[in-house]
Image 1 (tube, protein in one colour):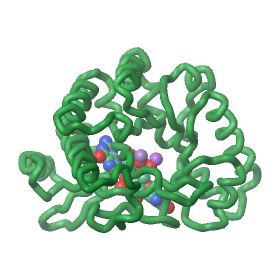
Image 2 (image 1 turned 180 degrees about the vertical axis):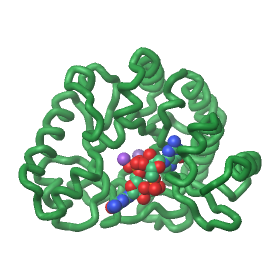
Image 3 (image 1 turned 90 degrees about the vertical axis):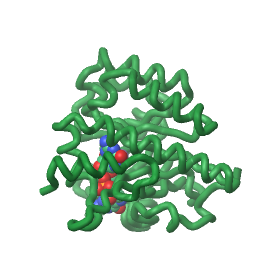
Length: 260
Ligand code: G
Ligand code: G
Ligand code: MN
Ligand code: NA
């Protein structure tokens, strides 16, 4: 159990140079070329007594307490600064930041993103945001204007954890998004040696997404055999332990960062 006071302290210190909160990065790999084409930023909290905590240990608390906006500001600031640093080193790889449902209920988050990109001279094309399917459809009238402004800025939007919510096909068609991330439960079904019909389900998602012009990414890919099935089903990119866990930026090999 993590206490609210701890989170307050971590966030106070979370101004850019604190090291209590950190972003780790997991590669997204193009299934055709095998190259790293992007990174997902995943937050970690280096807690003084509990060690390295994953988001499940503190994001729910942040959401309940209203601190999520500070958590998101930290994540976006850290990622845009990292992108600026990589650009200076002659590398550029798009980074995807997870937003929570609370973040997309208002366009404030877009103002923040616009200001950060401007301040650090980072092209919008290098930033992506991931929003869960559930958050996207929960409050459409508030979310759609946020998505539209992100699109105008040139920031790509991904639907995260797709397939476990219950978005209708018409809702999906009407969302201004760029990418669909198939939840890892479906990938696990393929991997387990094929729960009956699991390939058919993934292929249906891929075809639907492609027909709406969306790129498709599979999450939780752990072995080569599953990657081959996903490639055959038309999935564009994959992410998972097969390629890499989320690692601190220093552990990303320079080669995985695309030369500018
Ligand atoms: O890092 P891990 O693989 O345990 O991530 C679990 C979940 O936590 C992810 O599905 C992601 O949606 C969420 N998460 C990770 N980093 C962040 C973050 O910076 N902000 C928000 N809101 N959620 C995050
Ligand atoms: O919720 P979101 O999909 O944004 O977060 C990704 C989560 O999935 C993180 O908690 C990350 O550690 C986890 N993850 C990433 N790759 C794999 C994988 O190959 N297998 C499993 N089981 N989990 C993974
Ligand atoms: Mn995600
Ligand atoms: Na996900």
